Image (cartoon, rainbow, N blue to C red):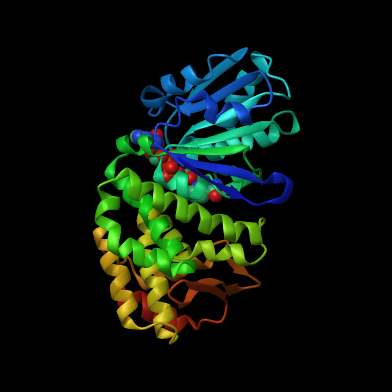
Length: 360
Ligand code: NAD
Ligand code: MG
C-alpha cells in the first residue's frame, strides 16, 4: 500500500493505492470527522463491494446506503436529489460524510451532492473502475449532465481521501478496463515520457491486471494528473492538456451517439488523430505515431475513426465542443513525446488531412 498527496493548499488530500483496502477501517477512520456516514453506490457495484465496506464502517452511529440505478443516463439532478432526500429523511447533519463507492458516474454525483448538501459536507472517494481511479477521482471536478449538455452542472469540490483498491478491478468488464487504459496512456503522452516507455514494456502485464503493474500505473497516472491539477486547479490554463485526444473523441461520441463507443475508446482514436495533426505540424515523427498505435492495439483500443464517419461530421461536432474560445478551435497537440501544449491556430485543411489519415 502506498500513498500520494494531491497538493492543493488547505484542500490537499491523500490518494491511497493498494489491494484489499476496502475492508480495513484504518484506511477510512482517520478521514471521517463525524459519527454519520452515507455510502452512495449503484446496483452493479453494491453486491460486489458494499458488504466489505459496511463491515469497515460498523462502529459509526449512523450508516446509510443509497443504491442508484447504473448508467450515465442517470447522472442527473433528479438522481442527486434522491441522495438529498435520503440524507434529509435520515437526518444527516453537517458533520456527515458521503462515501462514493463506484465508477466515475457515482463519484461525480456523490461529490456534487457533498458540495451542495447543507452547503458542503465531507466526502470520500472509493473509485472502482480504472477510469475513476486514474482520472475522475483526481482533481475535484464533480457534477451531473443536463439534457442540453454533459457535465454542465457541477462544482469543484475535493474529497478528504481517495482509496484506490486494485482488488476491485478484478470484476471490471474488459471494455471498461481498456477504456481506463486509454487515459493512462494519455498521461504518458502529454507529460511523462518515462511512463510511456514503461507502458510499452509492461502493457501485457497491465492488460492481465497484474496487481503490481496496476498499482504502479494508477500511482503514476494519479501523480501526473495531480501535478497538472496542482498547477491549475480550475482549468484556466495548463489543466487543458488533460483534454488531449478529447476534442476528436467527443466528436466521435456525439456523432455515434453517446454509449456506442465508450469515452476511453473515443479518446484512444482521438489521441491518434491529435498525434497525427502534431506530426503534420512538424512536431513529432511518424515513428511515434506507430508506437502509439502499437500500444493502443495491445490495450485493445481503437486507433482510427469509426467506420463511415466523415471528416465533415468531425468538424461540425468539434465546432460545438466547449473547447472553442472566441471562435477559435483550441486543440491539445504534442510538442514531443511527454510534452503537450494547447494551440488555437491550426488551419482547418490540416485538421481535415489528419482526420483522413486516420480513416475519416
Ligand atoms: P461508470 O461509473 O459508468 O462505470 C462503468 C461501468 O462499470 C458501470 O456499469 C459500473 O456500474 C460498472 N462498475 C464500476 N465498478 C465496477 C467493478 N469494480 N466491477 C464491475 N463493474 C463495475 O463509468 P466510468 O468510466 O467509471 O466513469 C465515467 C464517468 O466519469 C462519466 O460520467 C464522466 O463524465 C466522468 N468523468 C469525470 C471526470 C472528473 O474529473 N470528474 C473525469 C473523467 C470522467
Ligand atoms: Mg477523459
